[in-house]
Length: 112
Image (cartoon, rainbow, N blue to C red):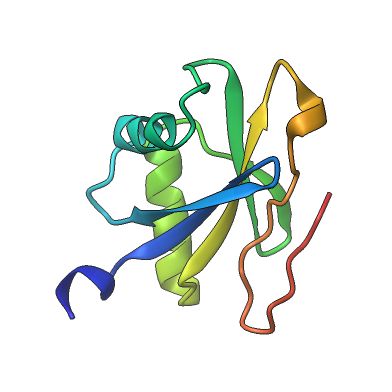
């Protein structure tokens, strides 16, 4: 089992495109940024924001290593295996999805 035992999938959505990123305890915020930059070549630092929602908190910002640690701890405590993360362009908001809810076992996904 190894790698998947304590990993969570971040389903990062920008516009109508989603990509998965494996969130492990050792993933740093900078590593997450590097993965997103590799997936979307037109992204650049400071040109977008990341957010997710969790248990009644509709918009949790994802901006630092501490934020990633909190997200990881929340997923462990709630036994969540998948989290939807909104990648929101700060410049051109017409191409951005606002999906920010946690994947639920019922398949429901929340929208702003």
